[in-house]
Image (cartoon, rainbow, N blue to C red; front, side, top):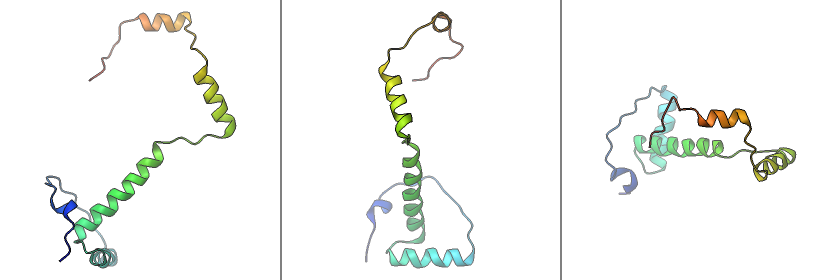
Length: 99
């Protein structure tokens, strides 16, 4: 019998419950069986894959050619510290970074 060890060897302490309609449940059961997985493993695998796709799309920024040029030029110019910024940097912070 086929064993998908990646999902069976992991200790799972968290629970996720969902409600689905009969047609969706039947679809998931058929797809899980075709993948040689139980429904839980199939749903976790599919949801995790989709979650990675969604988050990968958020980690990149698409710029037009003009915007990319402006961004590159801004990065290459040295920053100018004016009096207002200098004053702000010298004030005591109201927060602290957590490391």
